[in-house]
Amino acid sequence: MNQAEAKVIVIGGGIIGCSIAYYLAKTGTETVVIEKGNRVGSEASWAAAGILACRASTRNPYAELCRYSLALYPTLAKELQTVTGINIEFIQSGVLCIFLTEDEKKNWEGLAQRRLKHGYSAEILSSEQVQTLEPSISKKVIGGVHFPEDAQVRNPRLVKALACAAAKLGTKFLTGHSVKQFLFDGNQVVGVETSEDRILGDQFVIAAGPWSHQVANFLGVALPIKPAKGQMIIAETVEPIINRPIHGLETYIVPRTDGKLWVGPTVEDVGFDDRTTLSGIHQILESAIQLVPALAEKTLLKTRAGLRPKGKGKPYLGRLTEYCNVIVASGHYKNGILLAPITGKLIAELITKDNTSLSLDPFGVNHNTFSQQGGNEQKE
Ligand SMILES: Cc1cc2nc3c(=O)[nH]c(=O)nc-3n(C[C@H](O)[C@H](O)[C@H](O)COP(=O)(O)OP(=O)(O)OC[C@H]3O[C@@H](n4cnc5c(N)ncnc54)[C@H](O)[C@@H]3O)c2cc1C
Image 1 (cartoon, rainbow, N blue to C red):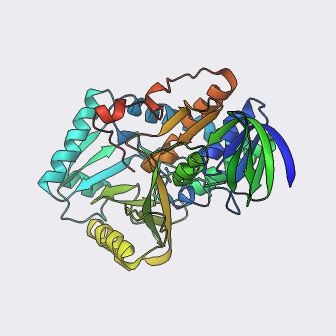
Image 2: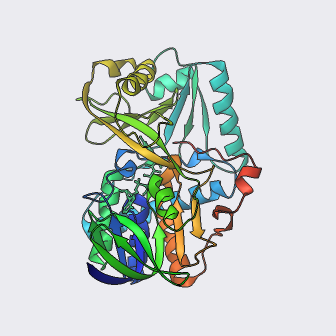
């Protein structure tokens, strides 16, 4: 069996692993990313809608993490375009949340008020104002809230650009290699054994999405992360029917610049079953067509499904107490695309400086701040 060496070994080449690799590469740290799939970003990071829903939470420290991550996007988009020529289509389009019932109105307007109180923007709109902004929206909609800070990005391109930029800066990507176990020297982790080879390293990052639980299990550590399936539909329009992402009835309709519409998702607790199903597609279409009836006549192009890594109300970011050279960066659930830049930046700081620009303490695996607060509001 071949044996190689690297300073840092990142397990998982989804958006989180690739972002960590990119921020590490910028510091010149010798890194290997190990990905079991045949290409990077082929799981949830590919299936996602690419909404950067900064409104996701008003509660710190989670809200702060979201805000800092969104703020990194404009510079990251420029850097990636310069280094790789890939346009990740980061667009600060805002998101229009619409409602059909008085209960939904109360919830959305409540969130808007809380955000305004914390100094963020939110515009509460009447049904007439919603129609003026987006004439294709159903006349049954009784109002909306526009969150102008929210944005969108082409997530498959983002993963590709992060990996490509990291590779140009010297990061090695081993695709088609699955980590099977860790190698030890006494109690110290010194390497990993994959389906193909052995790789020795100083520091290890578990960024294996919903499989992070299995990888941590190789160390005898129980990481509370499980899969939460989401399905999406991609439709095509010749003439655009909406100008910005619309969110209502738990469903997004996201217009891309190439005329495609990304519609979804579902949220399903079905383990590692990642099939697209007729009931999932039916559920998405029923909601989306209620919101924008003209969607019914558009062409169905493809369907996708992915497994979100769901922790207990927060992402886990930090060193394992049991093995101090093993770091976890996983459990981003519905906001992995939004949180990828800040995760990459903070984990790279932790590895290279042992000090981070935002405290990771609340995101430790054994820290219980979030559960004491009853969890956070993680929205897609
Ligand atoms: C339908 C849907 C819509 C979504 N919409 C949004 C959205 O609009 N905005 C947003 O911010 N987020 C969204 N999300 C959530 C987001 O996609 C995830 O939070 C994010 O992609 C998680 O990234 P990750 O890198 O942690 O996991 P993954 O993308 O799952 O990557 C983990 C990688 O690790 C690899 N791996 C696993 N085990 C091993 C092993 N033993 N050895 C080597 N490699 C291994 C896997 O093959 C995988 O490629 C959505 C998710 C879904 C499913």
